[in-house]
Amino acid sequence: MRDVLTAYENADRPKRAFALTAVHRDPYRGLVDALAGKAEVTDDTDINCDVCFSYLVESDGLYVVRLSMVGRYAIFGRVNGATTEPVSSQVECSSDFERDVLRLLGTYDFQTLTESQLAEPVRLALPEIERPTLRNALFFPEE
Image (cartoon, rainbow, N blue to C red; front, side, top):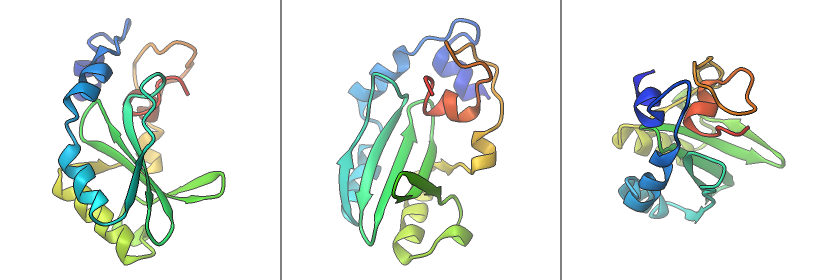
């Protein structure tokens, strides 16, 4: 995936400087503001470990929206206790709010990734990750 190599610069010695740059640029402010117009949004971003902006969204339930700093890739899910159920297509939606969030992500040109897409292997030398996946490269390089 070209976006991964562009962001990390080198697959054998990846650099994460792009994450700090992204935090300072705040490239998705318009999307986050639009989301905040629909529900209560809490920033849960952890720049120390992740390469994504993370938001807890409370509407008719609790949700998580993760926006990759690598490119316009998103994870959207409904929180059920200690687990998160992915919502990546209109078919998986159980409420108008979920459909609205997916439409909003699409309006801002985000690709909402499925679990199978996130599990795809990626050639990227991440410390302590034996078999990196797209989930690691786009969102969680230390998990």
